[in-house]
Length: 138
Figure 1 (cartoon, one colour):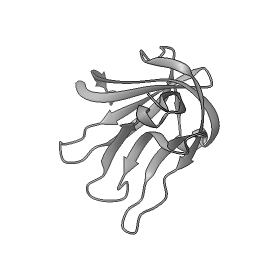
Figure 2 (cartoon, one colour):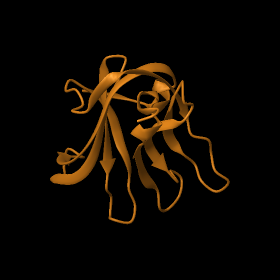
Figure 3 (cartoon, helix red, strand yellow):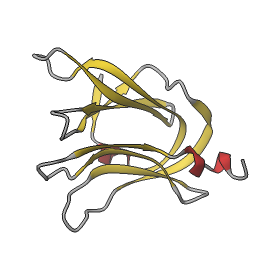
Figure 4 (cartoon, helix red, strand yellow):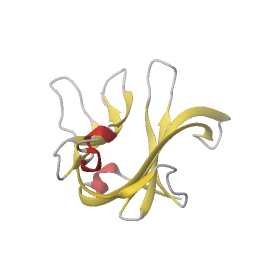
């Protein structure tokens, strides 16, 4: 499986699926299975899986984002989105990509690590399907 940087997903894409799952994964080659959250999302027909590193219970982050063969369980009609890296806060550094629906101009998916340079970084995985153009008036 190929690991990618979130910055490589900046720009326009067609989003056609998103799902969240809590599962046991091996985060490091020397570690046992760890229970964590994964997010699968399909852009332009390619599925990506962002994996949480739960760290120690107080801190968490995105371990990596991989290209994977399995499709998300939650599939829908393609929606044009654009991805941007979340801006830096006054006191924190973000490694978070935000996908906006090009019609509603609202954030529909956010993935990554916020407070990346702080003692307490945290995993970001937010899905807002109500902001999809497909759900206008529903």
